[in-house]
Image 1: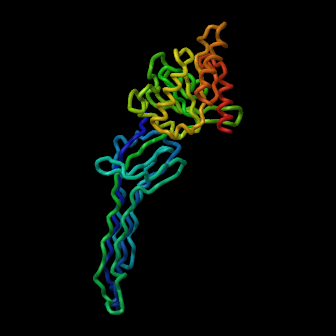
Image 2: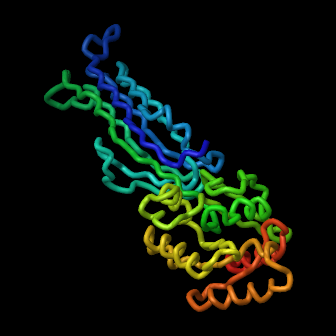
Image 3: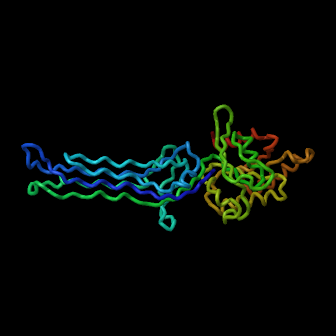
Length: 336
């Protein structure tokens, strides 16, 4: 199951207490203080891993408390530090600190690289043993300090997929068919709307050595940025992409209107998406009458070029027509 949102409660370990002890050996009845310091509490650390692709493991495990530091001991022995807790999250996870009412306070980290990490809760420092308080006028101090409490915080984890190309279109536009033919991904495919209920990543091979990653998200409908359909839940997954691929059924009554709706929904969700490079792909050309095929395709391309400056390609995800050309066009846009 794909889960891209979670909330967790973390707490660093408490530091160990400082020790009050005096050296007592044969022939040294008053050896002075030898109480060691307490160990430091463990930290809670989030680490990004390319081996993980969902936040599912946080559904039932939401609390992460690091262990306490060991108390100081005699003979000037410092207590062991508490053990850190490592939380593994997928690459592409954003971490927000929240209050107890789940309101966001600040963005803490964006873990976009494998093995990138951030400390979510620092452990408390250990207390000081009585050795630290020995002075020329106080040779037998009876003062120590307790360990400090570790930090305690609440966080919101939001996963945004890491992909080069974001595939957007209306339900039943053929996105799942396209990504399954371009890559080795195997999304569910059926002839009804909202077949895709969760994002899907596919690695596309171009030539012998070049590859790019394409992300298929559930179909967008008008009003998606306001939460209609499934759009709002998954639009975040195209925020990191370099290229936006608009997939439109060439049998649509008004292709220009379809493109404009998709464009406006992305703009309403995040105006920064306007800066992404775009490619419009007209799908299902295999359904066109053979004698009118070129005329219909050229007419659609001309209409689209009046409102967008991006390139327009016509393909058939089912028959595979022009799929190789599409791969190399994306490769050129990405400058691979």
